[in-house]
Image (cartoon, rainbow, N blue to C red; front, side, top):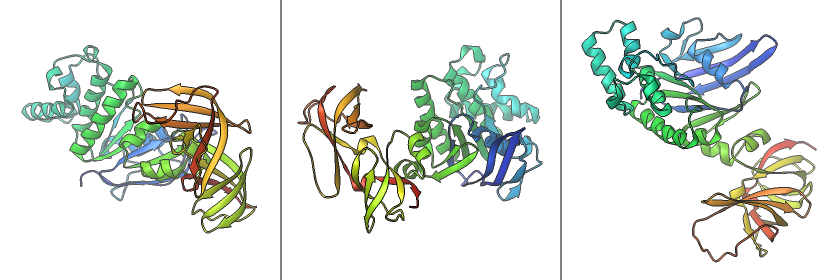
Amino acid sequence: MKGSDVAVSNVSKSFGSFAALKDVSVSINKGEFYSLLGPSGCGKTTLLRLIAGFEDPDRGQITIDGADVLGLPPDKRHCNTVFQSYALFPHLSVFENVAFPLRIRKVPSRLIKELVFKHLELVQLEAHADKKPSQLSGGQKQRVAIARALINEPSVLLLDEPLSALDAKLRQHMLMELDAIHDKVGITFIYVTHDQQEALSVSDRIAVMNAGKVLQIGSPQQIYENPASEFVARFIGEANLFTGVVTRREGSLNLVDTDGFGPLLVDDETEVAVGDRIVATIRPEKIRISTERLEGPNINVLHGVVHEPVYSGFQTKYIIRADSGSLLTVFRQHANWSEGIPDIEWKDEVFLSFSARDMVIVERNPG
């Protein structure tokens, strides 16, 4: 396996009175595609800059392959960074932009040509070697920046929101290309993004951050299916949240008297007790919407009215106003044009059915 292990241990960093990172610890495995995900100002870019060596932490330790790198300049850490702004030299050709790190190292010209075309081929830009950056699209510029970052054969590639300047469709295309490049070169990628879909699409693991802290680390499936807090549930995708008090518990099955929705069953292994106040969540795609009441063992059923249908081609997103007045979100996938299900439209009365097993407890306050 290529690449390096990166360990950040109990790192804190402040800028004046602002605490950008608060006792952060992450452990990134060799060859992993690891994402730092969170809203603007959460500390993810600061953490990337500390790993790169552009900033020094106030406290804590950063190691690469077990060696302490604090105090080492960026060019001694075997890390290269791809920036959001591309940072290309406008007066140099694509070839010379990619060749620049090698020329700094005084690599022989014959070897430079071989290595540059090898990396341009990797990012599918060999036909554009003589162009200037101004003649390239945004996606092509980003690929030049990636080739230049990879030509020094770093063991860790740091990517600071590299796709945020691109339009949505090009961003998706570039994301798949970036994943393919990672598969080919096999080194450690540390990817900073605020886009949940980007992180879920390509990451081996994700660290969700907010307000300078790491809230949860796990695979995309773990983060999405079992959010560890209300913030993670809200930030990753869409979520319906229910707050209430546990009134009965049998094994992992809890009866919860929820605020505004009445009693609901929540089947979750989280250790709670009768009297505890909890927050539980369910994803919109796990709720079945119908004009008829559907019941079964450990199935929750709520009644409401369609407040807003939002058609998106592959699915319809329904905003439902429950009898209590509270809003819930439901996704209905369009697997087939006609599925024998009556069309559901604005102001229709509907029933929402969902299994207790699909409910996840994300917050617990002992009673």
